[in-house]
Amino acid sequence: MDFSFIFDLFYLKTLLQGLMVTIIFALIAVIFGTLIAIIPTYFRLSKYKVLNIIGSSYVEVIRGTPLLVQVMLIYAMVQLPVMTVLGMDFGAFLLGMFALLINSSAYVSETLRAGILSVDRGQKEAGLSLGMTTNQTMIYVILPQAIKNIMPALGNEFVTLIKETSIFMYLGIAELMYSAQIVKTATYQTKEVYIITALLYFVLTFTTSKLMTKLEKRMRLQDAK
Image 1 (spheres, rainbow, N blue to C red):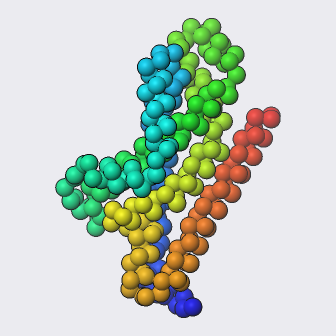
Image 2: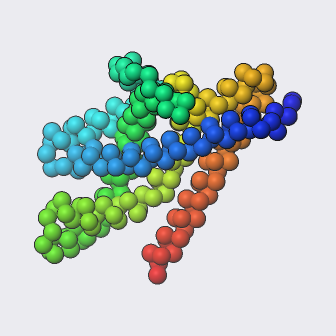
């Protein structure tokens, strides 16, 4: 096997730029996906049956279909004009990110619901006794504790999203997998390029997992004090 291409500045830069785009996409997806997840979570915990059905249906449908199918379906249904920004089709990026956000929000919603239910019921009663409304108690008392409880799960979701950003390759967006295709085409080193790409994914996900483990331990120590 010939890995000499990795010492070529152009190919190395191409792969590292793709890696950076992957990280940015995953961060955007997990942050905004969590914010969007609050809506179906609220619906699923609502006392109104209609909202409960809507929230549950949203989560089950999204979680029950592959992300690639969701991306292709959205891309087929919505036609945006080509808008080139920094050498990237911004229209394709918006559609791909929209699909990624929807997918992430469904998974995070289930995690967030479990986090809210894990908060002691006395916290809600304490908030209400202080004169807060039910919504204020949820926003200022329950939700912050729930998010703290699910931080490790959000870390796992980030790791998952890092790998799932590879679907952007089909939209012509230069994330890591698309960058690997560019290097492979130019060097004809198929196996070697994919091995290096796999190693980059592994290093990124392994590092993220270890950081989240340390964060979780630190949070447990703070809670124990």
